[in-house]
Image (tube, rainbow, N blue to C red; front, side, top):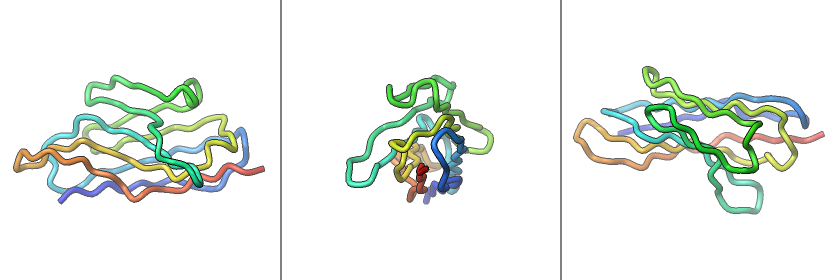
Length: 120
């Protein structure tokens, strides 16, 4: 069993910052890719940012220069620092991890999401 728990979602004003965190726990042997996705109201889920175990990152064009993804491998935790937030960043933010458990099975694990609302 592997769980991902997100935290940090809140209601903020445009231009403000937030930091999301996602902690993985359970039967974890290793975690390769960790990502943040988001689902705006009435829209589909989209990739926001990805980070590999070695720290290589990739971002959606809409968040480049404003969001920063990072991870603490010792804590099995991934973060998303969001600066200069815009109304269009409003969404439920989901954490994803590609996990290998102690049985050496590969698991595509998702968190339950945390709501970020950006409103004047």
